[in-house]
Length: 517
Image (cartoon, rainbow, N blue to C red; front, top):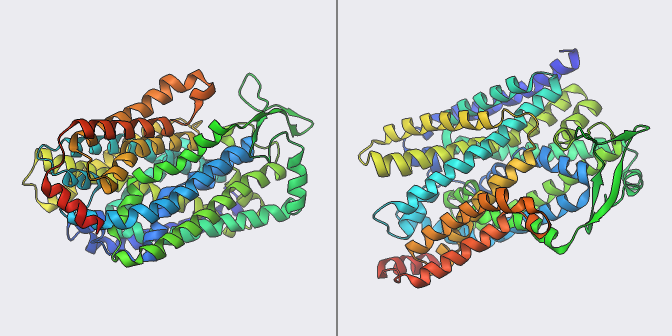
């Protein structure tokens, strides 16, 4: 490595040291009991709850996947995706947060999502708990792999090191950190990392725009690309047989723009539906210390989300104007953020900015691993296999599960041509369709039954796979994002099966009214 790369690495290592320090600080408290380890004793303040929810949600795709999408095909896909996410963030905090905070305490003081669903319907045979835990394990393995891909791409692009080596090292670091401090360490570091992420976005956008000649120069440059700056049409990079965009005289070639119809816009807006079933966000609602602070958290989270999404998209667009022919595949384009930082900024600042990507990755992957581990240890191991398991045993089993999930995620991430945005979109659809409709009906429809809950989860989760792998390849209207049809199918199954099955008993109805009031 040359001198500049060493300086970049030093600043990133300093950042990693701070993150590890947070884990060590909270380790003792986290290890007191499983509730502290998995939910932090319901002690999150409004700022920490808001920032940690958004940081754990956005992950590395905010700084790599979304700018890469804007760089590759222009504004349309990125804009409508961001619009859906911003709306989903606000509505989720507005209608779900307070009701879930109340209901999770009333429903047996639930500390995990499967716990809540199982206790909500007073099930004796833990069918809902088992199914929800298995879906969490499946989709969080996919989610974790996207974070490990981010680590691999980041260090590989910055230091010209083998992708697979850096990907595995990133996975090991995340596992060690999550081992130490549990939910409290994760939430505290996520607060810091949310700040780092938004500062990194603003810094890179500022430096890049200045280098490109200012906003007017960027706009003029991109206006020549058909459909690139429009929300009603999308740009089409011309690619050769090898899948790389064709370049002539140093400029990338584009075909005519394609119309971006209502179906496409709805497909991207559907990203917002995913929030209603996102465990890492819903857990923050359950963990906040005071329900009265939720309105403040909602405002903080929404403002952070809008600023971050807008800056990420602008970086992708500006990056195409500044470096039009550097990245010739969709996968490579996802390193535009780190490329701008390392090219235009002093190595020490570039390292701190690149730490923003690492921050996003850590803040998400530790959440994914911790939730998946809790689903196995608390909801499968304790409830199904070892009902008398001690708190210490539950935490030990959870840590073993955490390592195994990380290993599976790393194996999925071995393909260095993986597109982060594609991996995240599939896992996001999985959680949104499996848990989103059930969460809304559980909180707001008293007539929802245990049978309806089971039918909704299974139909939503299965439809994500069916639509993505069997129906979506037909193209046309069937190319719609799988979350939307799967969300609708799950909702229909919940309503129909609930109406066909006996009403919930009086105790379930009484708890519903307590949560509502």
